[in-house]
Image (cartoon, rainbow, N blue to C red):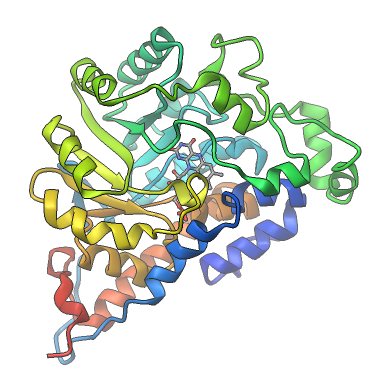
Amino acid sequence: AGSRSAYSIEDLRSRARDRLPRAVFDFFDGGAEDERALRANRAAYAGHRLVPYVLRDVSEISVASDILGKPSALPLAVGPTGAAGFGWRKGDIAIARAAAKAGIPYGLSTSATASIEEIAAAIPKGRRWFQAYILKNRAFTEKLIARARAAGFEALMITVDLPVGGKRERDYRNDFSIPFRFTRRNLLDFALHPKWSLPMLLRGVPKMPNLIGLDATATDSKALASSVGRNYDPSFDWDDLRRVRDLWDGKLIVKGVMRVSDAERVARLGCDALVVSNHGGRQLDAGLATLDALGPIASAVGSELEVMVDGGIRRGTDIVVALALGAKAVLIGRPTLYGMCANGEAGAIRALDILHDEFRRTMQLCGLTCVSQVSSDIFRTD
Ligand code: FNR
């Protein structure tokens, strides 16, 4: 496979599909139910056209940005994604290193296949955010948060769009579950991908170390959806979020907000940032694209906290569009996963290089010389 000759995120996605068993690729690639939200996220970007300024000197431009008060090489962060180790051995560390090398923040998922401490050791100088779900076992949640603080994570990210797991039908059809099982239905798929399957058989399937101790099965865990149902707490509410705010003195990011009134409550609670997100179309499959939710939220609360957006960002042009609609920064999930699945750390680096190059080039083609110049004027023809 390799990733050197991949020129777009879509190229990396194809490489990932070639390398992985179908069931594993579909786990990363898929969304909930009819995948309308997944498609809507992408489609919303296609609905926005940029109108360039010409004859401006763009020989020297800067794409650097500030996120949560600290410098970032790009207005981009890597969002948290669980179970990356199923794509590549130590896949989480591969992505974390790629983010650190690219000079952008990395979000570690609670359900990652690397521990909080392993990530801190792998990227001691890299910006690290820890994403937590609120678990039924609140004491365990608090311990996770304390571990993140001890390991020097600068931000805590609370994901709020997953009171229950989304209905991800590709996983059901492919018999993809965690703990991972070879079943009669998926055996041929794995047999046809020995380069992926043999190491899994020999070294064992990846675990979710942050969940060790939660319950006996959580680490070798069950199907993600059912593990969500068992351990994550659907009763989590605004009072709980307030308690988290009181508990955590670092930066607090709320991920998964889609409406203005919720964004205003998040701002009132004194959170530092929110991410307009529908979990990459893996949860509620109702179709509202995150980009369409972004504008009103950014207008309402953008002066009080940092508004970020994720879902469907695959091109540098998409980053410009999101910034023009009011995002301070964007997050990506699948782009770095595809790169990692295609070629480990080199593939994840490739994904970030592609986005960096495209973003810079788009800025130059638009006649923009720094990130703060990006505004909704870029959509106007006058
Ligand atoms: C995710 N996402 C996610 N979000 C989160 O808060 N905690 C998690 O553990 C995960 N896990 C996860 C696994 C996989 C395989 C994917 C694809 C996504 C959602 C993720 O952080 C982000 O919101 C979306 O991936 C953004 O959409 P794109 O960039 O994938 O289109």
